[in-house]
Image (cartoon, rainbow, N blue to C red; front, side, top):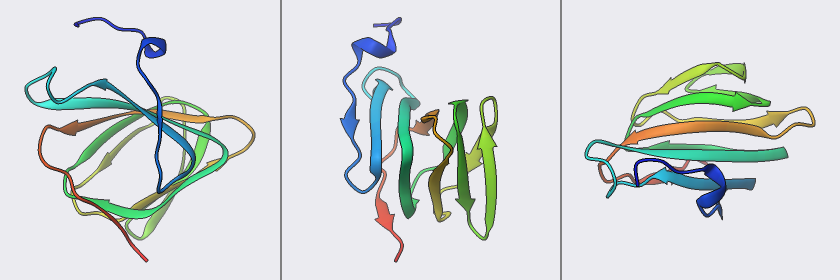
Length: 117
């Protein structure tokens, strides 16, 4: 379907994260090159340090978070854009009392996620 509403797409919990859901807005079988996901992290939510075998292109829709990219930590908010290269360790931690929400596009390639201890 070429047009959808966020509310029509099922949100599922990201098990490795805290208080975080994902919606696959454009699935790999719906587009030839990229998938699009919406992630919503509730206040106090987080994702641990992890790596992916595919790159990520992200745009923040709302809220604020601390995002670790490699050895750098950034505070991001609405309208910020992030690029996370394949294999780069990264994490997310919400800031404040508003949900942190972003869109994430990834190539339609196999993705292995590894939690970094």
